[in-house]
Image (cartoon, rainbow, N blue to C red; front, side):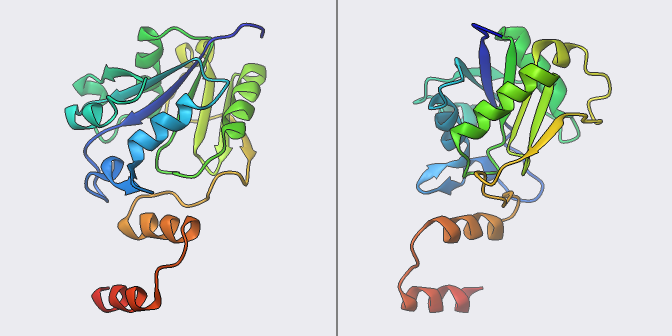
Length: 195
């Protein structure tokens, strides 16, 4: 599709059952949610970036970005709400041909993965990367989804996504260790004693 409009989104709630304030935790000195928003802003295929959140704190964390901030209604902010209704809410407010979501639980990803997901979604209606960092759908697919808990996306593997999904402090520390230089030996011994 020529001249298609692509809206990129990051959806982030303040509450997390497994890791409190997860979306606000720093990775390489930047909160995960802000890092995700800025990542989408740098993707050439993405025309507009939207942050969907129920939290003023998350919204304020991302105010320095160029992203549009969309307040998520209470009925879409519960722990058991599927992502598709949230995506539907986003594209009701920000019209597009293709919507692409970046899951900020995966702090290492390449813009080429976003472009690949958008192209596949444009061809098939919906695409989901493996690991599950990038999920794209056409507008028509979102508005005619059916059961939002049954994902029938075209899946594609891509090793340009770090495979660790951050849900626990240990996950975040593992991603740091994989993408940063080692600390001096004396620091490592200090960490081991505390753990």
